[in-house]
Image (cartoon, rainbow over all chains, first blue to last red; front, side):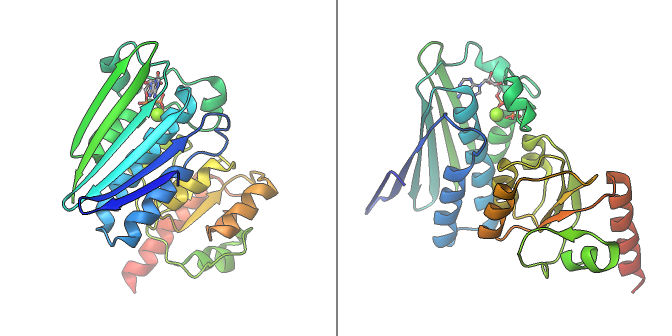
Length: 146
Length: 114
Ligand SMILES: Nc1ncnc2c1ncn2[C@@H]1O[C@H](COP(=O)(O)OP(=O)(O)OP(=O)(O)O)[C@@H](O)[C@H]1O
Ligand SMILES: [Mg+2]
């Protein structure tokens, strides 16, 4: 973990996601899942968060120049923010379509690139927002009701 | 059915040093990881020809009972080592998807008679 803050409001976890090695992705989402288990959060909810954070982590690793995942656990809400340092997405509506993918051959050989990651995140979360500036960044914000 | 049943009764090879007494709850097959994330269920046996490190995170996040490599697909020691650390069952078989599914269907029928 890269930082861990607790206060009266809740817990904030922040993890850096690198891009140098996508032969192994999923370490951050596995860590997040472990924390949620320790907090005795409902299994079905953990599952939805795990799927959504995994897909987000993979996208940062295979499509971006690197970024971070921030998880905020408050009383009745889990908020997750994923932000990367670009290159951004030209058309986010197109990116949200099932089956749309620009994944590289290398990524496809590893089983990525079905164009289902963003739709999976949207389906698993209670609130989903995608924002991107081409040439600059992509930021996702998801909320889960506990 | 338990993972161990595939080993004792159907000749699957457990290539990890892990707990094969876990119960299998259904079977799922895809080599596209986000299809697996979308459609897999906890307890599933997951048939895939992907034999690299990324399948371990998927199996652990989805809480699959085991990974089944069909067609005698080869796997690196590195992956087996990490699977041991995370207690993820990996099975190997020469069978193809059709024959593996047939085992699951037969077992289900057998269980429903009992
Ligand atoms: N963080 C990101 N930075 C830049 N582009 C992105 C990012 N996330 C997604 N995209 C773009 O949106 C497309 C669709 O993303 P999505 O996650 O749905 O599918 P995928 O990653 O291509 O395949 P899958 O997730 O099924 O393995 C990507 O192919 C890519 O073009
Ligand atoms: Mg994706």
